[in-house]
Length: 401
Image (cartoon, rainbow, N blue to C red; front, side):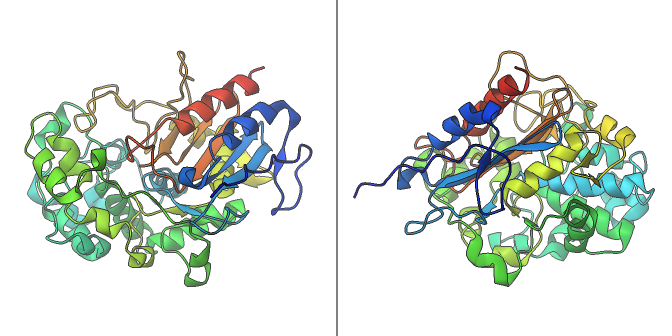
C-alpha cells in the first residue's frame, strides 16, 4: 500500500504548539528531516532546534505506529538520551550546594563505600570513572532491573573495576541508577520529583519523563524493530559477546539478559531508570539544551547560572573509554556533540541514545538540537545510526552562515 509523503512544514514565526514552524534560514534542515520519513518502514520522529535562544525549527513527520501518523504531542522512548537529563538534575543540586562534585559519593550514600569504593567522587561518577559499568549478571532476571532498590543495593555492594584507574568505562545502564540514588540521598526527594522540580517546571515543559503518567502513555510512539544486534537473537548473542575479548565490556555494560524483552514491557514506564528509559518530546529536550547553550537561560527562564554552565563543556578525561573502545571526551554527565563533520564543535556537549535519538548544545554557536524517533537505527543496525549527527551538522552549518 502506498504512503503519502509527509507534508512540508509552514515557514514563518512560531505558532501554536500543534503547528509546525520553521525559520526561513533553517528551511534546508527541515527538508533534510522530512526526507527521512517517506514510508511507514521509516517510522516517525520529531526535530526541534533553538538558535540564540529562539526556536527556529519545530517539525515532526512519519508514523508513531502502524496505523497513526506522528502527532504534535507524540513522545518516544529515547534510551540513553535520558542521561543528559539526569545529569542536569545533578548540576541544579550542585549549584545550590546540595551536592559537591569533589565530595565522595559515600558521603551522601554511605553503603556505596563498600568493597573499596569509599574514595570515588561525584565528579568521577559523572564522567564514567566509577568502575561500575557491569550490569550483566548484576540481577538474575531482566525484569529485576525495574527494582531500583535491588539494583542500587547490588551496585553499592559491588567492587569497582580496576580499569577505572586507566580511563573511563561507559556505564550504559548503571549510570542512571547511580545518579538517581545519589541525588535522592542528597536531596531527600525521589528522582522523579527531582526531574519535575529541577528541570521540567523551571523550563515550563512536561515531556521529560522516566515514570510516565498513565494518562499520557497513549502518546508514546511504538518502538521498532527489536534491539537485536545484526538481527540475531538477543540471549545467545549477548552471552557470546560477553565471552569475547574486545567486546566483553560492551556486553557487560549494556547487554543484560532479558533486556530485549524489557524494552517492550509496558511496565517499564512505571519505574525511573534514567540510564535508558526516558520518554521525551523533542521540544522539551531542545528547550533544556537551549538553556545550556545560552549561559543557562532561555525564553526568560533560568535553568542554571552561567558559571555553572561554563563547567559543563569542560572535558574531564580524554582517555579511551574501555567499554566503547574510543575516546568519548566525557564531560560532567555528557559526551562531545559528535556531529557528522570534519571539524567538531569544540564546546558542544549532549547525549545520544540507542537507536538514534538524542540532543546536544553548542555554546559557541548558541545552538541546541533535539531529535526523537521510534525507528531504531537502520535496516543493518538497530543500535545506532547517523540521522542526528547529520542533522546536527546541517544545523551547525546554517547557524554559522
